[in-house]
Image (cartoon, rainbow, N blue to C red; front, side, top):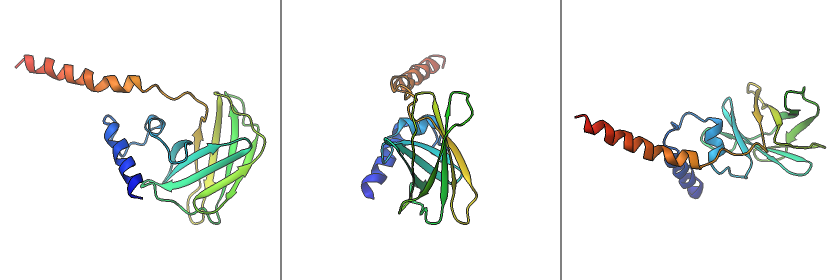
Length: 160
């Protein structure tokens, strides 16, 4: 647990331009997720989607990255390519701990969007979109920001 907290704090320190409360897609795409999947926010949850051959595994945590039990919950993953209507959907069922899992035939392309619905007992249903194969934003553009703001700052001092 301590190691993951340190990792979270390190990640938060690295993403200076994003307030910790703003969990944008860029923020999730820039951090390493616990299971190597894509992470998105859905209502009170952080959902991490991991796709394998024919399996879809969804890890549910709260905003503090604590596991949320999926006992008695249900979910659905719908696959959409580009602007087409979702074709296939896979039912997601509790698989112990904070996991919803489903199996089915699906093919992922960089244009594939997976819309995930999650309904846990006594909670509002939530949904969010994943694009598992979308290329990650390049890290280089983020590294240049601090240098740019520093030079802007020096420039500001010259006027005084």
